[in-house]
Image (cartoon, rainbow, N blue to C red; front, side):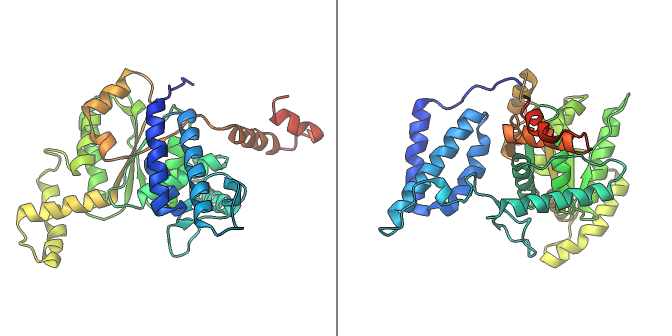
Amino acid sequence: MHSLKSQLSNKSKQYLLTALNSFFSLFYYTNYTSIIKYTFFSLINDEDQKWFDDACKDSIVKMKNDATEEGGTVTSWEDIVPGGGSLLFSDLMSAEGKYEYIPDKNALQKSVEDFLDNYNEENSKAPMRLVMFMAAIGHVCRLVRVLRQPQGNALCLGVGGSGRQSLTRLATFIREYDVFQVEIKKGYSMNEWREDIKTCLLKAGLSQVPVTFLFTDTQIVNEQMVEDINNILNSGDLPNLYGPEEIEQIMTTCRSDCQKKKIPPTKINIFSQYISRVRQNTHVVFCMSPLGDDFRRRLRMFPSLVNCCTIDWFLPWPEDALRSVAHRALTEEDLKLGDQLDNLVEGK
């Protein structure tokens, strides 16, 4: 895979270290996950992410020692988080849907695998044969968190085959939403595209069904498609999308929203209530490759792709992930490998 260069200079790193120490001195380590959500996942390669993660953990250890009475000091991150790794927060383990700290990563992995089994049972014609290692589970937790928010949208950046679409489908299944994805075939026109978009938005606005609109840059046959997605992210609407019949449906269905809110049921106000429904129930997940000039050009031309989306970088999978995949592939059937299994997994 193409290697993305570090975006952090030494001066930038020093500035971040100062800011981290100041932040943690105020809010302590319970806010580690907030910093990770909004800074860590905006960094574009393993080098910068590892540096930032280590800096966060060092600051937390220092602040915890400063706040702990004599005799109760900790020496490493593993003293705070058994087994090391990152703090994980999710609502997947809570029966009440609470977004909370997950101390038992093995239990979280079992929960995600159970969701995957249920997905495959309900979609037996197109099952997803995924290995749920911790890096993939982190993406699932992140996407579930994005989708649970009104107007929650995601920009998944990575090369093809990195799991962007599969993990989005799993996260959507966990949230019990519908997935909507256009089917690009030979001769697919902009008229068909607008009809597909209209079907998705009417489903979200009239039926109030939460929908994940999944789209990839390989499906782009006309740049107008990207502009339309930009407009949906920004306003929830496209110019001249609805005909007289759809407008009449919208007026009939959404009039009650005006009455509940005690606002005049004018045509403008009713349509505004419809747009509010659309924006609350439509979740755009746009999967793009960060390679090439098209990526940079589209981000410059359509700023809502960044401003209205949570960015999730799908970087090359770590070694433990590759071992998990190799182990799964070699143990699905009894190949009678015996003691050679571990050597084969390690590539020896």
